[in-house]
Image (tube, rainbow, N blue to C red; front, side):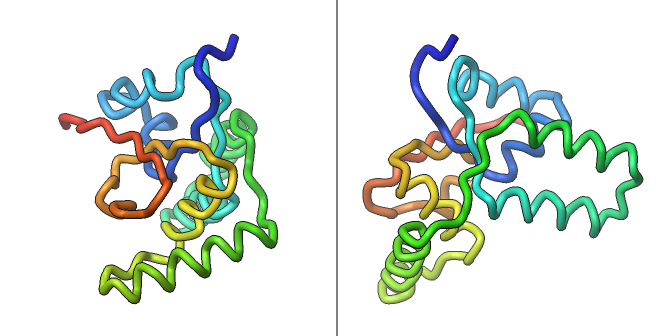
Length: 138
């Protein structure tokens, strides 16, 4: 049963949930009972990480299984417009944003859903973006 709406989770949160441990426990209250989505960019980042780390077929299969637990927000024209505006504004302000983070933020903004991340600093001062961040003790 969904108790309080929807959230988008950043790539690092997916990684924490896959690994388990204290980081996953800290994230759990933010995703429990919610419709959890990830950006198409997060999917790409996770596949990149798997390839870079030379994961075997078993771990890649586990990644595939994990990805099926989330709604993947696909590319669309309005997200691209949001991305362009957001990235340009941050650069104008002298606070450029990594392109992957800008795409993830644009997906969350376009769909009006909060973003759960461990890297809140990456998303500071983005108008209308609600960021949920839990300080994780490791």
